[in-house]
Image (cartoon, rainbow, N blue to C red; front, top):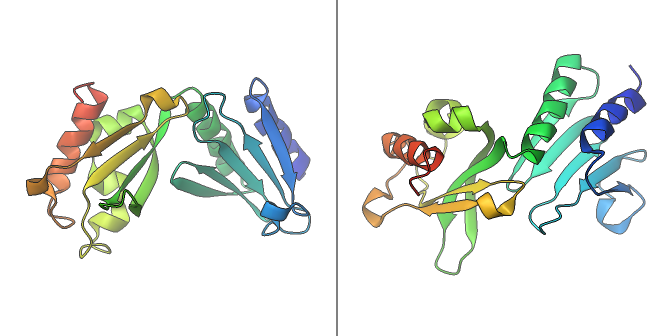
Length: 186
């Protein structure tokens, strides 16, 4: 399959959006390969842009999250197109967990793209398997960040001091918080 066919499918999904195509010879895009390009989908509400890098693979970046896709696997390309469409329609958001420091800096611990159905379940094992497995068990989490294309839907949910426990100890708390988020109780 030619890469141009892949680009056409992506461009069909974003045709109603304002976007810019960047090339590897531009200052901020030198890390792309020689023939690499980056499609930046501009957010009209001045929220997070979506970046789709095409080099040896596709990389979709939105908010604190990014994901890689093969340029030759039809299933992955289909997932990429569906993910872009889901973000643009606010059916999918970037869910991140981390530690917000007193100086307002966010220390990222993990992110995932999540459809609303999965986030409603709040299953930490599914959403953040690397954290659940204990890779970050010495790090504290005090905030959950939800980032949408429509940035008026964005939420940052601070965890109460008594709930700032180490992973995976507060997995049940995380499940409860996500359930409340998706039921509109925050």
